[in-house]
Length: 414
Image (cartoon, rainbow, N blue to C red; front, top):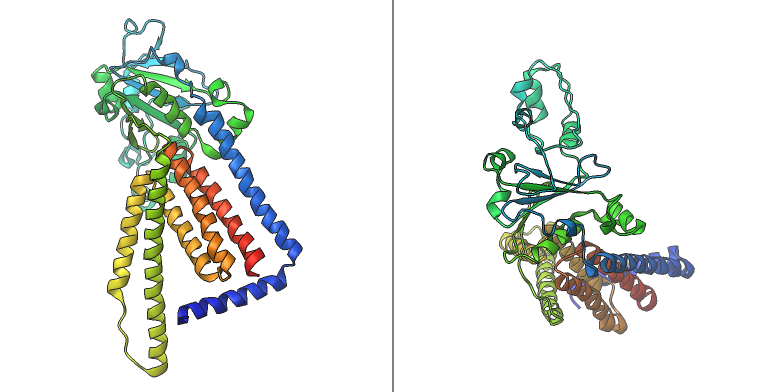
């Protein structure tokens, strides 16, 4: 047993004795049951959402399947209690789409779309009013408060309040087109080129495609409507030979629909990817811990014996760059940097638990099996259903891993 293992064993023994003295067995059982109950509740939420939205087709845009302009843009917005027509056209003549409301455009609307600068409002009071039905959403200008106040020190202007009014946090807007270039054009250019834009407004309080009251509560408070919009547009894209492109107007992200066949053999690929990612991250983290521990030991020896040491800059820089590259690779696989970071964090916590808390043969033999089982469940769900609700699946996997840690610690280590 090396110095690091003896240190970990001493830390674990001290922590376990303190924990056993502070918390009686009855409290430990209640705490263990509470964590299991929380994991089962999140699993029930995931199963309910999967059955309600993933397995059943989302038909929010079924009424425009044959109407939307193939040579233009389909814009889908989610608004509550909107007073305008649920379907209307912009920059298009009524003769091309009979029976659909066509919005009239005036010069005043074009003037509203001009970019506002601070120079336009010198020596004037500014009062922003939120338009319920804006034609164009402009992201708030990144002008610092000191720069704005340099023009007029007596002017009071809250940028956070203005940003919230210009760009509401509850807006969900996507645009879909068969031509990628259409999505990058401004509103004025679309109007000048007469590119038809069909605007479809969905109301979560009235449209039946958002499910029952419990489903609407989950979407409104926890999940958001991004996946609903994606699934609705994907249902339209499946009928097109050219699957087309999607743009999230709020975040500015662009997506491309491609044909993918996810068979049951995809579980094998998910298992292989999980093993590669987990072992790679664990190896890099253990190497970095070893380098840091060696440096601390050398530092203590230097202070005790008055010796000179060399800082291991090259090994630490190498492992840091390797971890950054590993996170970039995982971000490409999961299409999300946050998910990749949390997976690395979960692997690190599991690695520390295995190194510090697992001393008995039962824990060493069986706990890693439970960890890989729960971790593989997340990879399988993400890979099989193309990342839909993967954040909730990751939370579910982590809660079950957390329960397994507490269970093995209570029953086999204490």
